[in-house]
Length: 118
Image (cartoon, rainbow, N blue to C red; front, side, top):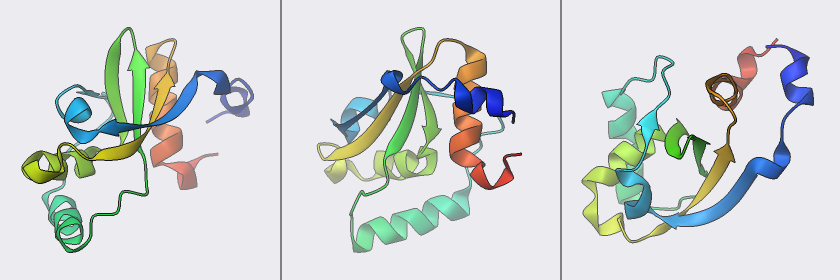
């Protein structure tokens, strides 16, 4: 990924807030970049949540043309869908307003593949 993208990040379009799990559970799309469900990861997250629910890591959402896309936290949201008692709990969410699909996909790559950036 080129340094051009990093130099042109629009930080004013990134918001950090708390949202009820229920408000985001069924209100997102998946970025079209090999985002698949890993059942082993979901089971591991669910076991951890059942022991202690402590949502420190935010869910990252990209917003493009009034649609919400999950950038990071996909497996956590899948676990939250199953645990109804958490639906009214507020969790940290980072919303990133994107200007086009290219920017949306680049944020996805930055957030999920930081160790692979060149």
